[in-house]
Picture 1 (tube, one colour):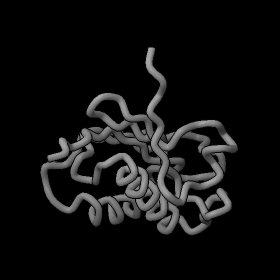
Picture 2 (tube, helix red, strand yellow):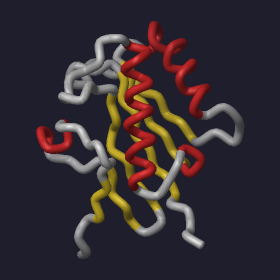
Picture 3 (cartoon, rainbow, N blue to C red):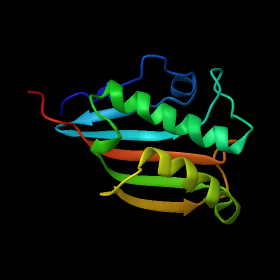
Length: 132
């Protein structure tokens, strides 16, 4: 078995070391991105919910770029929400800025009771574009 090909963004946060995981793993032409959250530089949750969601997408963007991808390369999204009924409108506003036109990626949203102090998390699978 070959070693995992770990990918980290340039300004990686302390959560990766604290909790022992990689930002993403490259496998063939796919990039499997771990759940990204809206943390402050010290790894603590951003208290403003809309800002937390935006920071999660910013972290996702940095991780995708480190793996040679962008938002257009995402094929599958899973999001986790601590209070979907009350958070949905805010999440959709941020989501619509990132994914502004079809075709949209496949998407699964899950309501959860715990995200280690966070209220939103996003993980994706992206296809790494062929390099010309």
